[in-house]
Length: 372
Image (cartoon, rainbow, N blue to C red):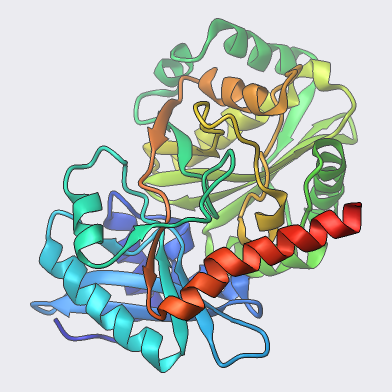
């Protein structure tokens, strides 16, 4: 299977058509992650058609000639055909060597119960990543909640918990309005709500400049959209969702500490679902929830690598943050999906040990010393 240069539009069409597709594997995502990460797109064709794509994000290891390769929510291929997976892995190894990569980390949006995929990865030399831990299970959340929105709006809403339906109607009665015609000039409103959320929930947020870059790369290419809820002139909550029909992802969210009793987040979610349906989406992905079996909490030190570095929006009136997050999303009828998680292909054993074992120990020791 020869490697092939591919136009962005053709690349994105291939990603969208895959049941394992994700906006994080669109070419535009590489532009969002610059300059900390450099995009390295790799594609294979078979019979004149695309057979596999991998948007690699390359990160240089400071003061070395080494780097790491990360394929967020990818690669994209038919995992029922191991020959394609092997051909792509061989190509990734070649590219990695030319960039001095010490490992290739993959994170396909493949359910953990899909037969044969884990065996294929092991046969290719991958193993579960040792640093994919914490309540969300890795750089991207291992556990997500998905909702089928293919039915009519009335039928979709009928699947919500009755309290959630009541809250949506309550928000409307109380005068909550969802603004859908947001522009780039509205980003500071979103970011102020996001800053409040970060302070309240104890996570490290991203600067406004990051979201401005995201707007230019994704919103302008019709791959994302900003929503803001208001009560009169006062913004109450906001969210950015990504879209690549037939899927839509709720990625970033934020909410004010005020007027939470008028349920703006319920109204916002319902507005985003209706918009996704208008775009031709049949799946609405609420993104990350905590693995209730892990008992863990999100790892703040990975915030810079995550699209939604911490839980997006608290459930209105929720108590425990993680439990409230899960309960909020489940109330819409969404179903838990457990992915395979992150898998590493070590390319240099010594460097791999330094990166995954020695470096975390040194960082932890320095933190303990600073806090002592």
